[in-house]
Image 1: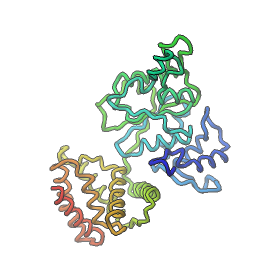
Image 2: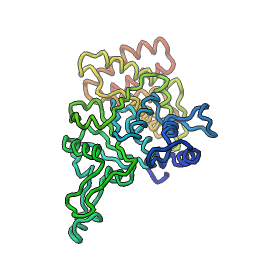
Image 3: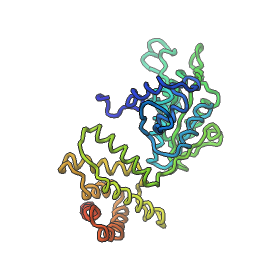
Image 4: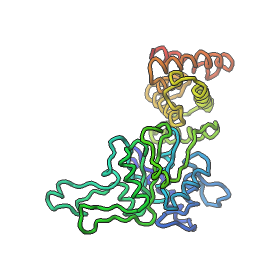
Length: 370
């Protein structure tokens, strides 16, 4: 893991997955490495009622029903589509499910306007084709085809970003469960082995970019991942990700709970203001997701560690928040300036403490960017 900038979930939690597999006595669908109950336990963490000899920490924070519906879908012959706003943890949940079920979360296709059928089916090694002709040896299977051949989970990120031709190619894969290779005379069909399925993700803000056809929708079970609005749940997510960051960078820096409260409250205020805004010009371009909240805190921690006194302050946190959210000038700066004067300033007078430094740090950052 020390040689990886970011280890996939099956590597990062390999020891835990090995242990869960060793004590798992539940029925396993197809070629699954863990039973559905153990998959859920790996993702959401253990409870005392589970009766395990060790604690399993939660890795995804959300409603249990979303995870259970996802697992049930993957045990059927339908694909799973996780849909929601940016930063709601769709990709992370897909990675955790793939790691627990298949011990391989890296069979991923990234959907873009440039994604082609080759990316979900196969392509050719040109030099080998010239030398020896087309054969299975000279074929380069896509991550989805590899998942089919091995009977494991394949992933498709940002499905609605890909064109209709690519989406149509998925229909036959999800319904027929095979890919034909017309260039070959023999051994020209790749059949999916039991256990194969696809987890796709889609950004709800991309609606209208490349809408899914009715035929493709029928082959997916939809699980909508909502934005986390519960402060306790959001605090757990931010704290979990922050602890991971500190371990990865070997940083010994304490995040005061009062500062975490300031961050959570600020995002809650800005979300409320965005919801009540009358036009897009009155809304921040940021989705104000939990992931962006984590990004603000990460930026502040790294800045404090490298350029500060190894202590996280409210001024640094405010500067990071303004720098991260002010993406449009002058629109976003005007919105943040209004928020600082209309909300943060009165709050700092009423509560003082961390809010006073937060007020000053934000003012300086806005003035600098203006």
